[in-house]
Image 1 (cartoon, rainbow, N blue to C red):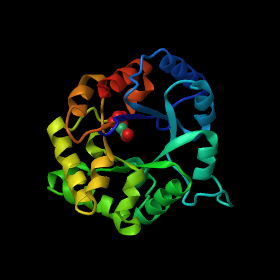
Image 2 (spheres, helix red, strand yellow):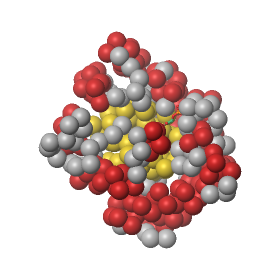
Image 3 (cartoon, rainbow, N blue to C red):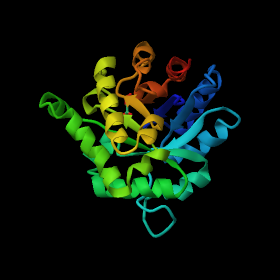
Image 4 (tube, rainbow, N blue to C red):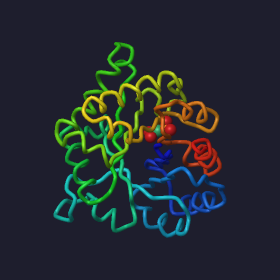
Length: 251
Ligand code: PGA
């Protein structure tokens, strides 16, 4: 059985004061013990969150990491070994906002993915199609290529210690959610693609859905056989809402 996971991607939101409020709000939540719960604040607030959530069963993750695992002369970047040292366990890689707005492409994403694993952290690989690609019937091809980029570079075993988040770009921050059936179809295809190389890895890897998840649609989405939890953006900034989504992933 795969253990469900819910991760909150805070994106570029927050101030010290609002982060303190969110930590306090999370502290009041009744959180399920059978779900891995992660929050991913801007790097600036990682320490504040790690300290503030001490003693709670909430892991901390980062939204990005440098192309090399170790420290070095790389102005403005943060090494994954530094994120590990700061108390992180997971790091996002390939989020569509970084692919589209920062221009990150496969080669850079592959290096980041490898650096994250090399440092002992778990990458959360984000993949997903745009609206144009979906309308052109290219969804499975696009997602398949994004997955193949990692498989071709590092082999299927790279997914023995990784999480995949399927996030249709048209559903991110738009209020439009993939229907549970639409999401399940893609998740099943992702798992089948992995299973062609290694059935055990495919069965074990957690596939999260992301894109306008809220407490009102979480139960239905998480009830699908190949959806193992969610990557939550906007709704993760509200502690009550995030707590409800985490409970929806529990049994
Ligand atoms: P959203 O973002 O929940 O605000 O749509 C999801 C994400 O980008 O991870």
